[in-house]
Length: 149
Image 1 (cartoon, one colour):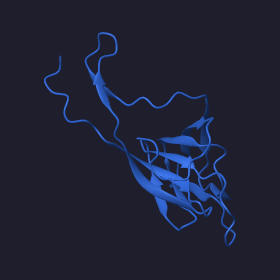
Image 2 (cartoon, rainbow, N blue to C red; image 1 turned 60 degrees about the vertical axis):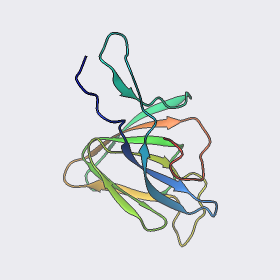
Image 3 (tube, rainbow, N blue to C red; image 1 turned 30 degrees about the vertical axis):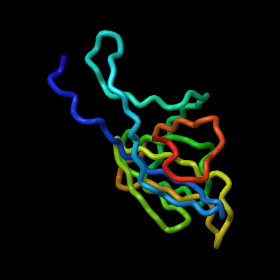
Image 4 (cartoon, helix red, strand yellow; image 1 turned 180 degrees about the horizontal axis):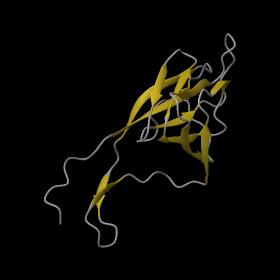
């Protein structure tokens, strides 16, 4: 057995969400509900299982210079950056950038159109494509930040 497993981890993610007025925002959240246990005979590890639901996995390659003008995510979805870099801008003007290993929760369905903005904009950064894995959850979107712990 390993000598120490350390303290209970926290793992950051960005949550793109919509408020009750239909405006999208981004909030940095933390996954915190980790439990330490073994899987089979492997040494104990920290696990944070999420609620079971149906999901669709989609891999996306966004070309160099790609910009997705104002749009909503097709479904609540976890977005994991596998390689390259990209940015996301919400209706409130918040813009974040992410690279390999970063992930976010896109949950901006049902936004209002305000000054030509609806949902979010996103695009690639740099001279290589952004490769993303999305896990589209077949659940209803929420209207509060950080609902996944």
